[in-house]
Length: 242
Image (tube, rainbow, N blue to C red; front, side, top):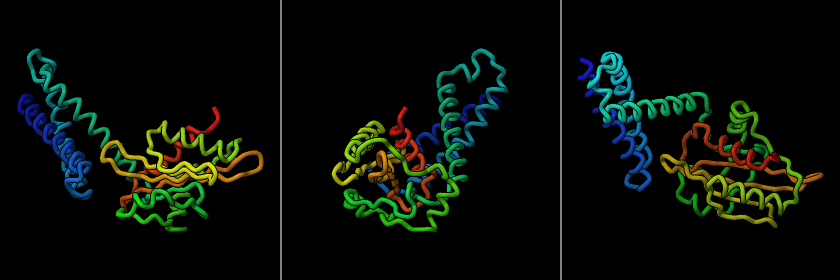
C-alpha cells in the first residue's frame, strides 16, 4: 500500500509542478491573461495538496525499509518539491487572509505622490494610476500602521541619489531619477508571475533634512497580498541610517 500511495503522490506532485510551471511561464510569456494563469496555479495547488500527505503517509508506512520508495531519488525529489511548494502556498494563502484587498500603498495617504514617468508604461494596465482616497487609506492605516514618511538628514538631491541606489540594489528598474524635482520612479517585478508594481518617491525639504514619501501601486486590479507594503518597507529600510 505504501508503494501505491507513493506512486500516486509522485504523479500528483509531478502534475502540480507542471501546472505551476505552465501557469507562471505562460503568463510571463504573454501566452494567456492573468486569470487563466491563476486558475492553472490553483489547480497546481490542489494537486500538491493531495500529493504531499500521500507521500508523507507512504514514508511513514514504509518504516524506512531498504529498497522502499523513499530511498529512490525520484521519490525524495518529489517529496522535497511538494513540501516546499505546499509550505510556500500555505504562507501565501495566510498572507492573503490577513491582507486588505487593496493594491495602492502610500506613506502619505492625504497627498500621495503622483506618478508621472511610469504613466506610459501603465497605459494598458487594468488598475488606474489615481489614488482611490479615504476608502483605501482607512484600510491601509488599519493593516499597515508602520507605513509612514521617512526623515533623512540630507539635501533633496542627495536623498534622490540615495533612493536611486537603494532602488537599484533591490533590483528595481529605475524609470526616472530627477534630483532637481525631488522625484524618483521605478518598476519592481515579482519573481513568480512577473507582476509589475510601480513606485514613485517624493523628496521634500524639511527642517534639518528632507521628508521622503513613497507610493507603490500594482498594475493588476486585484488585492496585492501585502506586496506593496513589503516593497515600501524594504525600500525605507535600505535608506535608514545604520
